[in-house]
Image (tube, rainbow, N blue to C red; front, side):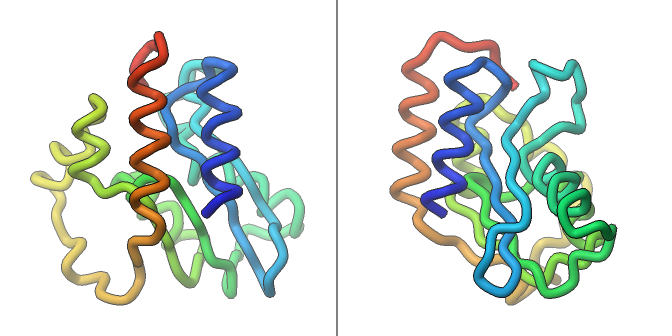
Length: 148
């Protein structure tokens, strides 16, 4: 998770997007990394998880990320959650919760109310290092930034 936080910090310091960094690990080795680049790329789909999935696919030469674990600073939105499932990510570890994402101006909870279903994913996602990720979110909020 420490590397995901570093990835997020790099992105927010450069004004790429929100405080969402992601690393993907397979067999103890980082195979993908990314951060939110929505503002930089003018691409609403370029969340940290999607960016890292794209990177891992390029590095591994495959769209099938079976056996990979994903570490991300914020609980994935529905788009990212589905992208992880499409990529066959085996496990997701996240720092801040959907509710925490809302506290810093993101609307993930709106989509959760529409789509729901997280309760059916028992064991797939695990909260990890929330306090460290909350510190990242607080730092993000203290910076001048465009929200996304």
